[in-house]
Amino acid sequence: MPQTDRLTLSVSQLNGYVRSLLQQDVLLRSLCLRGEISGFKRHVSGHLYFSLKDEGGLIRCVMFRQNAQRLSFAPRDGQRVLLSGSVSLYEAQGQYQFYGESMERDGVGELWQRFERDKARFAAEGLFAPEKKRPLPAAPSRIGVATSASGAAIRDIVRVAQRRSPAVDILLCPCRVQGEGAADSIARALFALAKQDVQAIIVGRGGGSMEDLWAFNEEAVVRAVAACPVPVISAVGHETDFTLSDFAADVRAATPSNAAELLVPDVRQQLQRLDDLRQRVRARTLRALAEREGALSRLAERVRPQTALRLLDGKESALAALRARSIAGAKSALSGKEAAFGRAQARLRALDPESVLRRGYAAVQKDGAPLHDISGVAPGDELALRLYGGSLRAQVRAVFPDAKEDVR
Image (tube, rainbow, N blue to C red; front, side, top):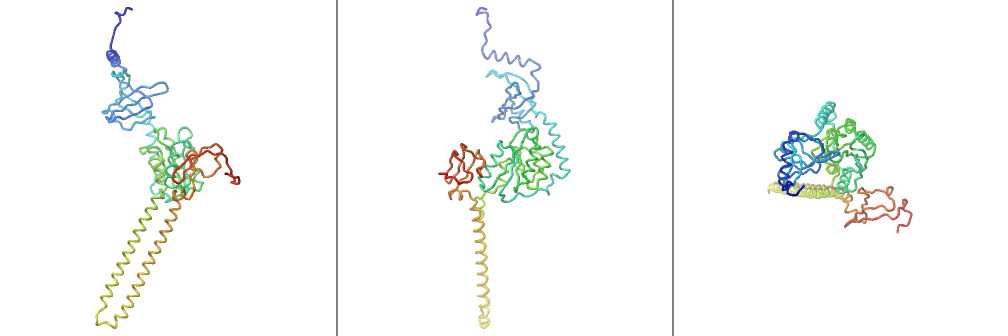
């Protein structure tokens, strides 16, 4: 075809023409897309930008603020949704995209009805009764965790617990937390941990969609949590996620990290509180002693008249003896309280990780978990060592199980 016979358009004209074709198609002006949210972003303007994808494709989507404000849930990556709207072309970039007007979670209607139905049934049985909730131990030495061995939840729990009190022992019973068989796996892990010498159990996982977290709504898990002989903290998903296990547990934590904070006391904070309490008790005792001395002095003045000189000698002697006994008693009480505080403070300081490291010891980790013995160590393994003043990484050259070899 000769050059002069070709239709010549600018880029803007072409994009405008394609956009008009899309808008003229009745089917594309109003339809509903089913897919999984990916690359979700909420702009400061309030507009939502994301993609919908399935096994075979992906389309860019936008939902403007006036429509986003009407949503009944907070969209996030991984959620399966039904998005209603229209197809058009963003002329400035020549990008074909979907303009959403409303959105609902795909399949959640049925799941939500099941959730509410089971919640009412378990509540009627008394599984969620407030009077059955047990307090958490004040300072557990050993806690159990039922979660995935490879998930972020166990790493978060170990990290927070060791920072607050390295002396606490964490026993992990790995289990599936999503998909087929997950509910039975979680229930078995709870029963297994309950047979160990643990003072409390954390059960949970990281965030996800309602479908991802559904195992913690299953009857097997809810009943296992309610029947557990030791206190249970449910730590499933994010702060806004709720499961039936949360209602059955003794305590619900917003996240796995929060569960560790609730269960493991901070040794350094306890030391500071003990010091503050010691100072308050000492000040209060000294104040009471001063008040008692003042009262005795005033009493002595009242019985000093000249008309009772012969009686005065006997009363002054009695007052002096009473004063001496009061002062001695107050000092003895203060000394006893200071000794008790000293013993408690010494016990807490023994748990302070910095004190332990300062004496030449090291905290050893392998793959992010604390290493208590050498049964899981082999030559060539990478270890992380925390010492006083810093940390280092080391590689195992040899393992001596009985410590009889010369390790130099």
